Length: 515
Image 1: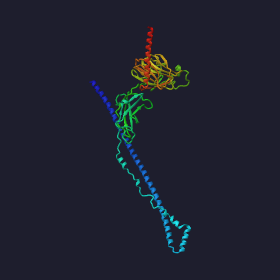
Image 2 (image 1 turned 60 degrees about the vertical axis):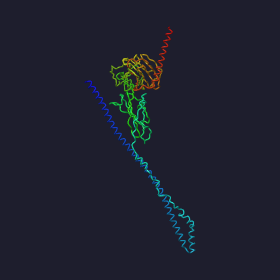
Image 3 (image 1 turned 30 degrees about the horizontal axis):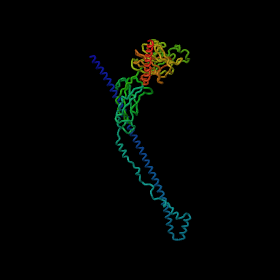
Image 4 (image 1 turned 90 degrees about the vertical axis):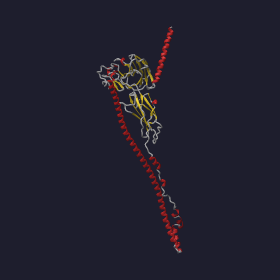
């Protein structure tokens, strides 16, 4: 009965969680529906207002053309009317003079009148040059304005056929083309049916796509309480997108990422595709502040060396910097001077990672800060490091050591042995650890150069390990193993193979000589 009751309680707990997720989804959908309805209504009003303004603008243009033509014709007709009135007045005056002249019967008086008229101007010339002879009796303009008649029957029919844009159908995510590699995620999909991006605002085809993704630690698309919300990438014109994060590489701090896509035309967005879950597992760890030396200040992904007490407590710093230091007498907020039970002490300025490696491949990167003097980075068995041990001086620790103290050096250290490396000091170091194959590689990421490699057999769980003195370092975790590591691994293993063949040949040769 107890077992049955436990199963019932477990089932009820799962059902309760699913119901809470469902209610949250319903509430979000309701809020989204209200927002989307208001948005669509606003866009419709904006379209209608644009249509009205366009029609008014066109109407004003047509009215202006009609008024301009009316004014032109009125001016021409008024000009003809004025000329006609003047010609009529002149004609009446000449006609009256001619009638008066014809009524004179006395020859002397007739000659007297004609001579008097000739003194001013020739009568015949005056008659023939009268405005009435020059005036055209054809109208310069007509009252016909039918050429300005418009026919909106076609446009009216188009408006009557006006309808909402069809909603694009959900695309189909091509899971086989979705790749998580080199700290980026490439997502590809196929349009549904005949939908395709064409930029034609009057059609129902796809204008762009929207991609949403969120991180999760479950291998299904259901969201549990406390998980991240959807992040959006909008206005995608192609049928694929590469997610790289904002301003830096995407950090894979979860085991999976859920992807979904939807299509959008001018204003309408379709339904989302079926979510696709992609595995994005990477090595995530932080500094274990509890393991840090008391004079190391741990902040997020950064470790800095902050000496407690007077500056002269470290003999290497005496007389080297006469300038006062803001860090010389202030203890780290993460550590106190009375922390005698610290994991590391003395000159072992070491801090460990908080996650172990006991299989598979792991990769992370380190950047020295601007004021660094000495650092080491590598891996170690947690139990192999004593309280005063430094990295590389035990059989259970391997590291790359860089120094700008007195002289610039770069070396690889393991089991209290150091090998000097003839490389310039890198600004970005990639650390690759293949626990199963026993490979530990240090890469100059900016120059894509192999700095050093260890080949061994790991027998206990490893932890990332760091030593910092005078300055600081920052790390980047949540990174996938980059693709360029394949070239270094193949080269390293080829060299190991040829070295193994050489050793066998050398032993065989010595055996023959002894024989």
